[in-house]
Image 1 (cartoon, protein in one colour):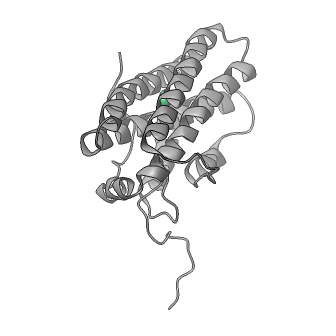
Image 2 (spheres, helix red, strand yellow):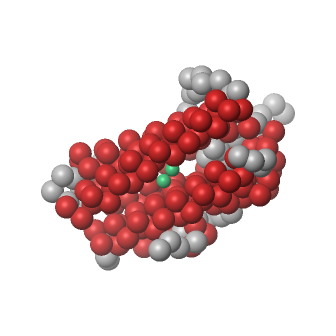
Length: 207
Ligand SMILES: [Fe+2]
Ligand SMILES: [Fe+2]
């Protein structure tokens, strides 16, 4: 069972980002491949950080394997389309989301779970937006991934609720506002989770 990504996202992806993505398909795929590896590594990091939490271990192990299969699917699509594998510097999104994470537990665990939920929900939303606009075989792949990432964000929200029944909603509100800014405000670099291309709001402006 999965919920709609919009149920936790505070702002929809701007239409301009979708148009940017369609003009930057090689960069989209290169960053998407990185995101799948990162999603697997996030699940593994949680398993290492909280080995005593048996409720997390088995679902996160399955999730990590699923993300690595997604990586293999994107990698095959890149090969089929002749998109080169290059090292790409990450955008601002994940790094800036992490600035709000609390540094000690129990708060840190809840923040890690909610941040993972938001990233998965944004991914699901963007796959759904892109699937009808991309040619095959990407359209089919992205439609399939939209469903998988929606399941993942639902799983992470469930973990957050179980871990902090009193606090999770309030904390989600705070993190979701920050996430929505990062996903919607103008961004210098196009990435899977970037804002639409433009001059960042904090960039120096000439008078
Ligand atoms: Fe994935
Ligand atoms: Fe995922």
